[in-house]
Length: 57
Image 1 (cartoon, rainbow, N blue to C red):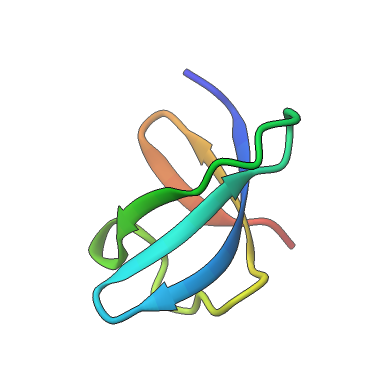
Image 2 (cartoon, rainbow, N blue to C red):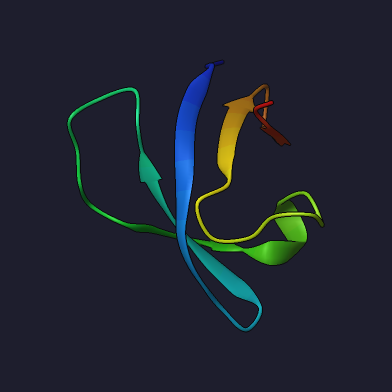
């Protein structure tokens, strides 16, 4: 499954808002921070593949 690419647009407590960057969809998706890498901050780019998020370097 995947990969799909996202960007963290904002962080609100225990949740982060992500936007897909590999398609032209500007709709934000709410994701629990427990599912994301600990080191994320706003504008961090992520890859989702096989049900796991990782930071794109």
